[in-house]
Length: 550
Image (cartoon, rainbow, N blue to C red; front, side, top):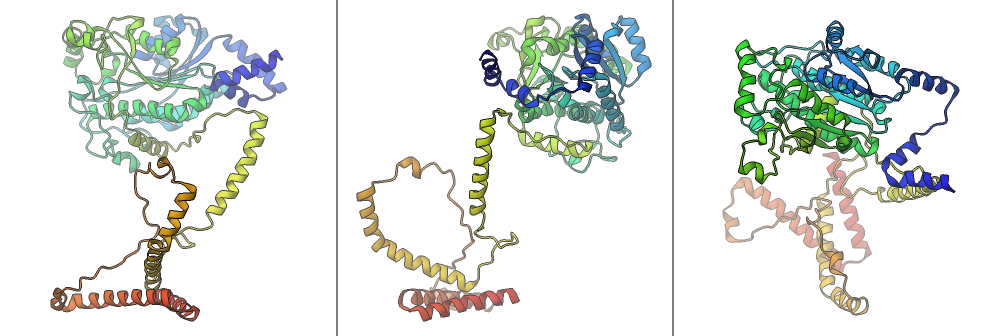
């Protein structure tokens, strides 16, 4: 009895309860050995993947994770020799750190990395996937291309991470507290000074570049001229939009918390290695003493670590930021917003300064995000699972569902036997002239009957049955559109007809002929017997045969 109650509690308490039961499979002998090997390799540690772990933000984040002794970190890096040197300098715990080669400028390399990771992790789920790696090429007035023929910034920062998430999402979903974290930027969020006040502005427009395949020579997502700084900002906008879309499509189904973050402006980061020397020298000074938005690599790494580690950050669909320096000295504005300045991220504030930041209308554009997802899947040649709501695996529910599904299908098939306004091949019906005349005649006659006999019947019905409730009649936001386009010409029989041109006279004669046909049809409908109705049907059939012949 207690076991049954426990199972029921698991099921009704959360989606993850049903998810666990639905994914459960009976273990095999081979699974036993795999589980044993997994335990020996990882112990009780959680498995975390960090891209770009050899420098900057990724380097400091990996170190923070390792210091807790609660994680085994896989560093996805381009240069293994550099990673080895960094690990030695920083004192990485190499028993719990595994570097793996992953060149984000090559989709083949990303696939190979994912294959190697799948083999390495054995039966261990991926608890965290941190998509951090990025490049910035603001000084170039021309695009550089990846091995796959795509602009480098967009491929490394966004497209390769899109592919990696696709490959690893199933393994992440098997974790008890799964999270996928994408590093965004204030520059991709144009509702801030940093994102909306400094040209160029992140803007994907209609994604014409992605729609056209985004291959050389198309260097920008919007299909326009290349600007290195905009390519970076656009890539960050793409990552933030992707995080929101993945949350909407897959959070309930997988249990994964999808989030994006802005850790602050890391002005001394290797991200700016392609900027000119004077910029690298003075930009940190400007950010420290003018804007207050400067954050050191160490503190930024702690912030990204927090989103991976802090239980409060298991919430999905969030853009995380921190209230550091930018709130200090802002006076009334800081008080009005409770200290939470949109786009904040300066140094200071500590662990508890984290908050859910606002996102711009561009980031929240659902329709554009849907197109971004579709085009990105085409560029990376990925197939994604259909989003489905997790349901209870209860046997009774399955039986009832199967019965109702068959019944619903049967009723729907009945409804779909007719398609008013369409031919058998799906093309719209072309209504013949005679049939249109017959339909108009039917409306006229039925209208007369409705306004005479029909009114009497309606009066009796209302007396006996009462009126329909108002909520059964009202509530539609649009009038129902006609199933068939019915064209009834209105002819002005004024004296102006006498002066019509020879060109329009032919049209007038045609409309007059139509009116005569309608009048004749009304006469047949009201006064004629069965033989006349038969003649009308023959006329309609003959007219339709003429249409086919034409």
